Each structure stands twice: as C-alpha cells, then as structure tokens.
Image 1 (cartoon, rainbow, N blue to C red):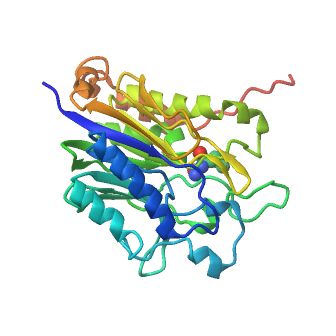
Image 2 (cartoon, rainbow, N blue to C red):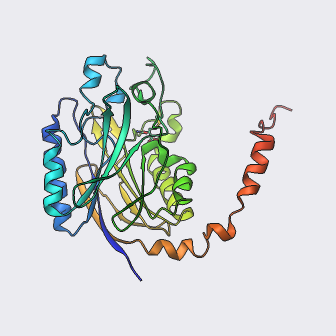
Image 3 (cartoon, protein in one colour):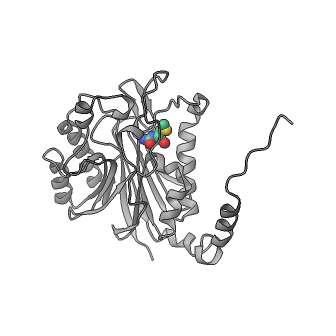
Length: 311
Ligand code: CDT
C-alpha cells in the first residue's frame, strides 16, 4: 500500500524590517504557484513567515504590535488563502498571533486543500532571554514577546494522514517528536528562524547546519515520521540565518534539500505509508518501549550532579 503526499518546502530568503505584508504575500504566492505547478498538495512555509524576525530587537510596544496578526486570514493574507483554495493546495504558515484577549503567541497553522484551518499550534519551547542584554550583537527576545503555547503537541487528521506541528526551537527537543510520536504522527511540519551566531557559546556557530539536520533526522527516525523543516535564511537585517530547509523520510534520510539562502522551493513525494515500515518493526512502541522504566528512575532520582572533576 502507499499513501503518497507531494510536499513542497518553501524556504524564504530575508524579509526586511520595512517590507510590507502585501509584498511578503506576493513572495509566498509565487512559491505557492510554483509548488502547485510541480504537483505539490501541501506547501510548508517558515516560522514568522510574514515579517522579519523581530525578536532580534528590543522594540517599543507600538512597533512590536505591528508585527502581529489580529486576524487570520487578514486583508493582506486572504489572497494566499484564496489562491491556495483555487489551486487545491494546502499550506503551513507561521506568524505572530495577537489574540482578541491580548495573548501573544508564535503560531503556525495548517490549511487544508479546501481552505479550512485544520490545525493551529502555538510554540511551546521559547528560546532566548526575557530582557534585553546589551552585550549581545543582536537580541533574541522571544521570551519577552511571546507566551508559551498552552495546547502542547497534538496530531491532526489532515492531508490523508496524521500531522503534527512544531516551531523552530521545538525541533531541538526530543519530547516534541515523542509526544507526537506517541499519538502516531506521520508528518511533522516545522518552520524555523535560526541565527547562525549563537552568542552564549559561539563555538556552536559552525555546527548550526549539522545540529539542524541532527535533531530533525533523529526525530523522524526515532518516531517513524516524515519531517519537513523549512527556514527563513540568508542575511536578514545584518543577521545571518540558517537556510538548509529539508524534507526527511522516516528512515532519517534527507530526500530533498534547498541549495540557496533565498526564496526556493523543493518538492518531494512523501509516502505516508513508509512510516508503517518503522512503526511496525524497530519502532513498534507498544511492543518495545518500556515507559515504566523511564519514569521509575527519573521520579526517584531527578537530575544527578556531574562528578567533581577537581578531586
Ligand atoms: N526561532 C528560534 O526558535 N530560534 C532558535 C535560535 C537559537 S536559541 C537563541 C533555534 O532553536 O533555532
């Protein structure tokens, strides 16, 4: 049996601070149309796709709020929904959400081919810092600007399979994939904005692309799922961000990968039934996992202090 789903990873190059939503949506529409022309049924756009990655600045409230969406779709984003529906293509889109009661989330939605919103996810793992830190060459103020999403990681029936969403820093945490994996996930869509320079430990800079693939490939393999990771890369407002968007099979193999740091589409046919090859064998969770062993030791001991290397 096979359940093929043709997926496009629609990577974005930089988005400028002054770039209008309307202009960004034009860029997204161009990639949506290209993807549809290449047979895609689902197009995955990055995290915070509609704006520049504004957490790099300490912003006054009036300017901060200009980067948030109060409605989805809005007048500016409706053309994307309309064109996707006309083409019969679904999409995944990340954006900053301001709710009617004033909550701010880093959000992603999954829109089905008929235009209905099949899933909405609000980022759980918020990286960076709560207050501006003058020593950094640029800020990472997600922890100031967003609340953690309250709804955890959930799978949704969409696109003929079980789909989960995660956002950027979530991809570094095994719990993200495992919580979805325990619900039988078959496809995880992940958007990211990853500065290559990591100020707290610049020794990690050269490993940015390695770690990006490492975590997503491990998450895919260990949970027998497809993973589509899509970045907004290139030099955006002076900050170099990771591109290297990729589509990863349940084997952990990358089957499509962007080659530029700009707007770029790569497409792959993803057979969702390939997940079963792993879910029914090496990662048959019901047969082989030992959850009682995992909770017993951690609830008894908690974290163990590292050995004193001085003695
Ligand atoms: N957007 C996002 O979550 N970026 C982080 C940057 C590193 S932590 C400051 C990431 O995990 O890629």
